[in-house]
Each structure stands twice: as structure tokens, then as C-alpha cells.
Image (tube, rainbow, N blue to C red; front, side, top):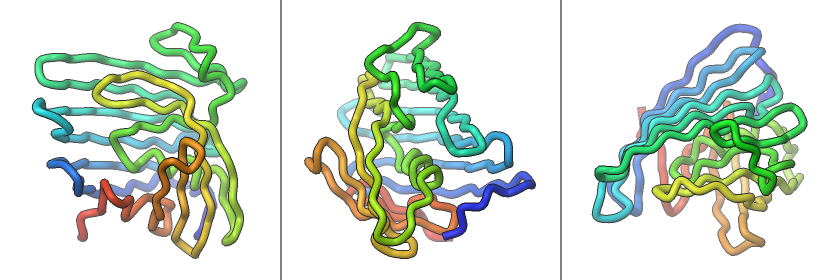
Length: 193
């Protein structure tokens, strides 16, 4: 997989469908040398109320999270979240310091496979290599944030073994040439086309 940072702005747009509950996501990755951005719009029904999540994540040129903006509607409840991370990996939610997240490598939105792209691109693993990271994991619809230990192991040209919570959860992630997830069993798969 090519991990070069492009000098020109490129955009990739795709759809994922949820496999375990009714749901779909429209996703756009905009890459440029200074600031890759992930933007998604998720419609999902995890319980008896529909959930809508509109998010945008800004990264450094090295795919390190700098900011995540989220707007969520769950039934009649509406909530916004602005999460930032500075160069020292100090995290803030709506301007308030979150010491439990300090040192986290990436943001991980539990509602989408898009944020797996961040460590996949940032780590640039060779086949057979494995790396541990700690993510600022955002749970939905609670909109809570906690550190989550994760490992990524590149087991093929475009195949990664992902594990979290000490191996309590594992999945094999098939990605495209940009490091964007195509299949994330048992929850998501890309809509062809």
C-alpha cells in the first residue's frame, strides 16, 4: 500500500452499510499535504430510537488527530462535541482538559469504520508488523470518551488484524489502496460502486 502524502487535493467519497442493525454512512476523505480530513454522515438504529451522527476530523500531515467535531441526534436528544488534541497529545472536550486521554494517539468514533484509517495511515506498517496504540474512543449514543488500547497487525497487502480491550474484540479489516476500510466484520461493509 502506498503511504505517500499527496501534494494535491484529492477526494474519495463512498458509502458503507451497517450489517448488524439498520444503518448507512456517507463518507468523504479529503487528502492534501497539510491537513487530511475525514467527514461522515451516519444514520443508524442501534436501539428503539434513530441515531444521526455528523462528524468531521482534521489531522496533521502525519495523520495525527487534531480536531473532531461531532453533531449527534438520538431520538429527541441533540448534542455537540468539539474534541481537540495538541502537538503534545493533550486532549480537550469543548475546551476543557481531559487528563485521562492525554497521550492518546488517535480519535476512534465507535459509530464508523472511518477512524481506523488514521492509525493505518499513520503507522504505515509493513506486512508482518504489529503496533499498539491508545485511542480516544467515543461511544455512541452515550457520547462518552475513554482511552482504548488497540493493536493493528498488517497480515496482508491490504489486510489488517485489529484488536482492542486486550483482545476482547478482534476483526480482520480489508482496506483499499488509501487505507480506507472496505469490510469491518461483523458491523460494516462498503457499498460497491
